[in-house]
Every structure is written in C-alpha cells, then in structure tokens.
Length: 72
Image (cartoon, rainbow, N blue to C red; front, side, top):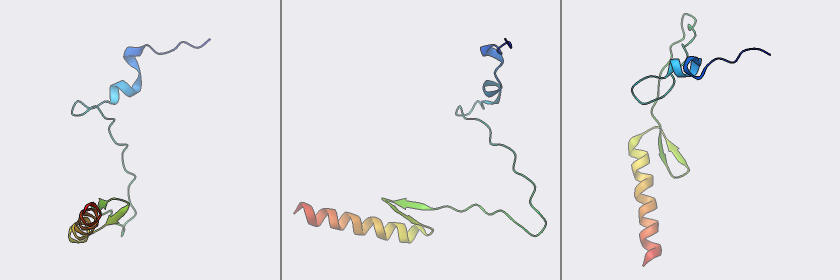
C-alpha cells in the first residue's frame, strides 16, 4: 500500500497564504501577442448585473421604491 503524506506536508497547506487563508491563484498562461486581459468590475443588485455603478444604483432605488410602496 502506498504511503500517505503526513498531515504536515500536504501540498495544499504549503500553498496557503498568510493574509486570509486562501490558496494562491494558479499562474496565468502567457497570452499571445495582440491579446490583452482586462479585469472588469460588475455590480450585482438582486438577480441583476451591471457594468456601470450608476445603473446598479438606479436599480437599487427602483427596488427600494417598490418595497416602500408595498409596505404602505
């Protein structure tokens, strides 16, 4: 029977970062020339997703208005 690694030497424990307890992200593959990766922020309001904060805020105001109208 193969020997199991001890609990102290498991690879996942060695990969924990000390600023929040999450595993380090795997390295990104090199992108071909002419391709650029761009990160984007999206805003969620209930089941809806928006790329613009102003649109998300408008949806939040709509939802709050509907809730206020139902409670009266």
